[in-house]
Length: 514
Image (cartoon, rainbow, N blue to C red; front, side):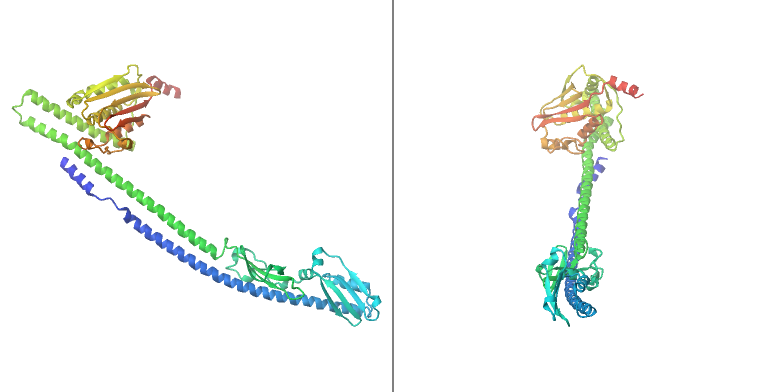
C-alpha cells in the first residue's frame, strides 16, 4: 500500500501544471484581431466622413449661390412691379394722382416706407407720404426713383421687409426633419437657408455641429447674405458615430477578452492549486503511513516468529503496534473529518460537556503515548468553568491535534502545558510549547490544508498538514476562533476560544421557542 501511494505521489509531483502562456496566447491573438478590425473600421469611417463632408460642402456652395441669385432676381422683380403698379394708378387717375393714389400705392407695397411724387407740370404740387415701421427697417433704408409719363417718383424702402415678404419658394430648401438623417436622406431635405448679415463673412464657415456657406447678395442688398447651413450633429449620427461605435466595439471586445483571460488564468490557478493539494495529500499521507506500516509489519513478523521473546519484549512490541495503529487511526480520522467539514457533511452534535473533565480525559487517554515520546504535560485548569454544549468528540480531537503538534515541534524541551480558562464571553483552551515556533508571516497559512511551515525541523517530522486545519474548522463550527502567539525559537501558544454556551441556557431555548 505504501509503495502504491509513493508511486502515485511521485507521478503527481512530476505532473507539470498548465502554462498560463498557452492560454493567454489565443486571447492575445483575438484581442489584436479585434483591435486591427476596430482601427480599420475607424479609418474607413473617417474616409467616408471626409467624402460626405466634401459632398455636403459642394452642395452648400451650390445652394447658397443659387438661392442668392434667386433672391436678387426676386427683389429686382418686386422693384419693377412696384413701378408698374404706380404707372397703372397714374393712368387710372387721368395723369393727376393725388394723396389717395400715393397712399394706395404704399398700401400695396408695405416694404416702401416713404414716397415723393414730383409732377413735371407743377413742382409746387409735389406729394409726400410716409408710413411707420419698426426701428430695424429704418436702419437699412435704400433710396430709389423712377420716371413716369407725368413726373418722377422717389421712395425709400427696407430690404429686410422686402426679403421677408418674398415667396418661400424662392429659397426652395425645406428644413431638415432630424439632424442625424443627413447621410441617408437627400441633402435638399436637410439644408436650411437663412438670410443673415453680410458681416458674418463669406464662403465656408465651420461651427460646432454645423457646416455653413455664406454668399453675399448683390446691390442694393449688399448688406445681406444667404447662409446655406447643414446641421451635422455628428455626435448623434453620421460617420463619426460609426467611428465611435467601432471604437467602442473594439474596446468592449478587448475588455471582454481580458476578463475571459483573467477568468481562465484564475481557473488554471485554482486547478493547479487543487492539483498541488492532491499531490501534497498523497505525499504527506504516504510519508505518514510509511513508518507506522513498517513498524506494524516488523512487529507482527517478530511476534509471529518470536518464540524466544520474553513476556516483557512481547508486551513492548504489542504496545508499539497499538501505538502505531492509534496514530494511523488518528490520521485517517483527521483526513475524513476535514473532508466532511469542508463539504458540510459532518455536523456538530452538542451535548453537555464538563470542560475540565474533557481535558483531563484526553490527557489521560493519550498519557502512555505522550510518555513514550518522553514528554510530560502540565495542566493548569480552572475548576469553576461551567458545563458547555459542545461536540465532545470534535473538541477532543482538536485538543489531541494541538498536543500532537506541540510534541512534534518542541525541540529539546520536553514539556507541554495545557490551560483551561473562563474568559469573558466564553471558554479558552490553550496549548503551549517551547519549541521552534512559527514566523508571523506564516501564522495565517498554517491553517491551510496540507501546508507545513518552512522550517528545516519540520521536514523530518511526520505529519499530513491537516491537524491545524481540522482544529480551526472544529472551533469555527462551534462559533469560536483560534488565536496564535508564536515566535521562532521561543515556542507557540494556540488558544481555542469557544463562545459561552452554558447547559442551562441551552436547555431553556426550546421552551422559549415553544
